[in-house]
Amino acid sequence: MRRFILLLLFLPIFVIGQSKKSLKETVIQYQDSITILSITTESLRNVISELRTHVSNLEKENSTQKNDKTTLLREKEQLTIKINLLKQEKSSNTEEINSLYSQIHILEDSIVNLYALIEKESFVNDSLKNLKIHNIISLKDLISQSNFSRKNIIGSWDLKTLVLSSHDEYVDFDNIYGYSQYSQNNYNYEADESLINEITFIDPNISIIKLIDGTKITCLFEIVENNNSKYREIINIKFVDTDREELEFTISEYGGAYIFHYNFNSLKYFFDRDDYQNNTNSFRITGVVYEDDWQVFDAYDIDIIGIIK
Image 1: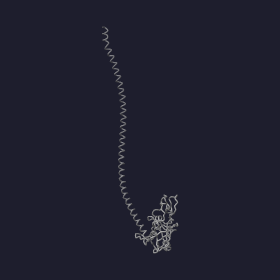
Image 2 (image 1 turned 180 degrees about the horizontal axis):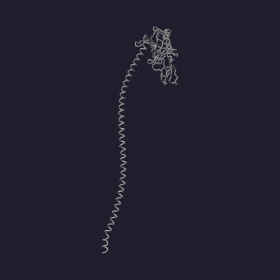
Image 3 (image 1 turned 120 degrees about the horizontal axis):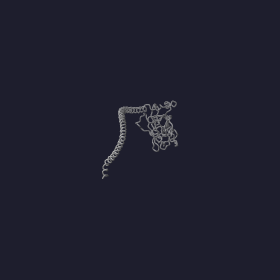
Image 4 (image 1 turned 90 degrees about the horizontal axis):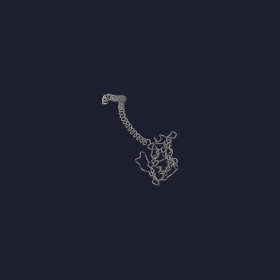
């Protein structure tokens, strides 16, 4: 009984001791929590500070981009103005170009008409305008040496080749030489020696044509009418060989001289010399610089012009 009473007396003291110990532990836990909260708060403050700095940088960048956008818009407006000005200038240039083209066409027509007038009124004179001084041929001497008669063509007549014509371009025959772009090919005939040198007319209608290189051909001839000719006092002669090949030969009178005219390709075919068989070379002009081997003086459309002596 006595022990029980003592136990009752010491029980409150024991309970109070236990409560103090528990309270101390709780206080320590709170202190640790406060320390953690302080650290977390400081970390958050740093994060907030960094976020504010980032936001400030973004605001600055946004402001810079706005300024750049404003600058770009101004540049766009300036470019738009320049483009409109260029469009107006292009329109003006197009009108000017069209006007120049129109003037060019008018000049081309005038040149064509001028060439036609030159051929009609002063054919030989302009054909000889490019002759070199030391090669000038006196038309009077040629006329005085000629016995050709329009009324009676029977006989042998020498032909003096003066110029080559192609598309209204006249070149002095003394400035012409034969040329082959294929140096490995052996041509049988030189172009500048494949022209007519002499024609003999035998009554009633037989003719002998002799080339400069000495080749001869005997054929028939016929004088034909041609009312569409642009030359005056004209004689149109058609030569026909045994293979029915034809060669047209025209004689016109100018200032007392008789001028002949024929096509070079027709002559080659008449003498069985064509480009396809590669047996006649082409013409080139002395003193002209040719950039390519294939360039020659219009091998497909050359007219031979000269005087019958």
